[in-house]
Every structure is written in C-alpha cells, then in structure tokens.
Image (cartoon, rainbow, N blue to C red; front, side, top):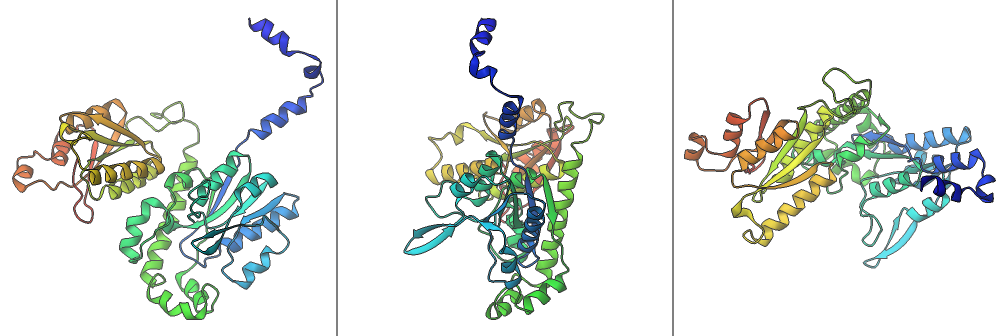
Length: 397
C-alpha cells in the first residue's frame, strides 16, 4: 500500500516541483519569534526603543510595519513613527464612542517580516476575535510573523497582588506569565527613579495637569523602586530560563524537561476566597525554578457540584481558568481524604513543592494536627510544603 500511494503521487506536476518549493513550505510553517521590551513604569522608553529598532531593521532591508503604537502625544516618540509603514487601525463604535484597535486581519494580510505591537496587556473592545492584545500577538506568531512588543512589569498576572499591595493601585489589565516565558528575547529598559521623575516633571510622560497626581500616587519613590526591582528580577529569571536550554546536566530529564522532583503543585479548595493569590504564588515559584506546575482541586464528597452553591462554583471555575491562562496543568481529583489524594498525586507526578494556604479551621483542630496544611507538613516526606499566608488568611483545601 505504501509503494502504490507513493507512485500515485508522482505525476507530471510533482516532477516539475523544485527543491525551493519544499523550502518555501518549511519556511511558511515556522512560527514567528517574539522580542519583548519590559519596563517598570510608563515613560522609561519602551515605545521609543521599539521604534528605534524598527528603523535599524528597516535600514538593513527588513520588512517592518507598525501594528499598533501608542505615542501618548510624546513628540520625540511621534517623530520616530515617520518613515515606518503603519497598518491602519480598526475603528469600532462601542457605547457611542469610537474606539481604535489594532487591525489583526490587516497585519495578517500584509504579512510583514516584523510587526511592532505596543501595550500588550490591553483588553480589546468586546466583539474582537481575541479578548487581549497579547493573544493577537500569538496569532501573528502562529502565522509566521515576528513581533517586537512591550509592556510594564506590573501587568504580569502573578504580580497582581504584590503590585496592588505595594503601590496601592489596582492593576486591571494583565498578561499571563506563560506569555513572557515564551519570549525569545527580553530586554529590560532600566532607568534611575530620579531620572524617570525628572522626565515626568519635564512633561515627557504625562501632560502638566496630571503630574502632581502621578507623583502622589503611582510615581512615588518607594513604588518605583519596588517596581524597578521586580523588573530586574523578571529579566534575570528569563536569562536563567534561557540558560536551562543548555546540554543536559546530571539529574535532569534527557528530554529537556525539568529535573525529577522539581515540579510545583498548588492545592485549591472550592471555598477558598483567596485562591487566586495561591495560584499567582505557585506561578512565581514555577517561574523561578523553571519547572512545570499543577493546580489540583481535590473534590471531596461534600464538594460535589450538586452540593456546593452557585457562587462557590463560579469562584472555583474562575480560579481554574486563571490557572490555565497562567500555564498550569489543572487537575480535578475525587477523594474522601484530600491529604492522601494530594500526596499520591505529588509522588506519581514528580512534584517537589506543594503550595497550600493557611487553614481557617478551629484552633483545637490545628493543635491536634488535623488541618490539611499541618498534615501535609507531617506526612509529605521528601517534599517541600509551602504554607502561604495571604490577605484574609487563605483557607486550605
């Protein structure tokens, strides 16, 4: 059968095909590369540097277009847009207001070698094909288009709680850490806090009427210092992840996966009001260890879908979706004893770290060692157990 199928495909048309035709198919199937400029605040120069790189690539004959760039009225940034082809934005009327979005179909149809895409954490207008702009970028990459993009470190999903606690500013638009991990190159645009505040005073970031408010809120010294440290740490970890692609070391998985026993497991319960914090902490730990991670929900008989209320189910599904977006493998296990189920899963899947929330159970149960965290600490021989305290004291599974 194999030989007849082979001979049937060899006809006059096939005979005329050139080796270059197959190479074209191979090239077409290649996924686009991703380069990210990461900053710790508005005004550090992400968009400016992207546009400078676009001009440099264009001078070397590379086909570059601007998919979406937001200059925020900065004259020096606007000047760099000149001379680079801009794919016209898509205009949509939403709630009687005209909104401009990147024209994803327009960029795909134009098919440049490189597309410049700014503000990747942006949420697209309802009705768009993708909910977030970073998802548009993934689609461009799938089509073989290389992308240079930018966003600020506070938009990383796993840092959401940290930034809100330190800066006192809720961050509503986020990007999953898995997107950053997929980047081929990450460039941190570092700037001294004093220099950034000087740029703010000079009107190079916001208009004069917005400067006093910015200095009293997001642009306070302490906030900026902390965000700067977070950005530096993120880039350092991305370098470590790249280094892990080197030849296999002793104890490492020959297939290129993480060493045995290094995987992370986050334990959820249906009633956890702060489970999202646990998921983010698990994501951070997995990123630092460059490891696979799981989010496991042990469904006890009392937590079957027909027994828990609609609000609890909705919250559980929201946390499960968040974990999936952040790159975790989500697993639901049915068992009467959550501790036994957690440890069985951990040992069968090479888990070396278990992340669990602090218990809200009565003190007498804790003194008797009957809460899930205390039992895990006592029974998880050879596995590190991280009992996490969160705002509001996260409940255990």
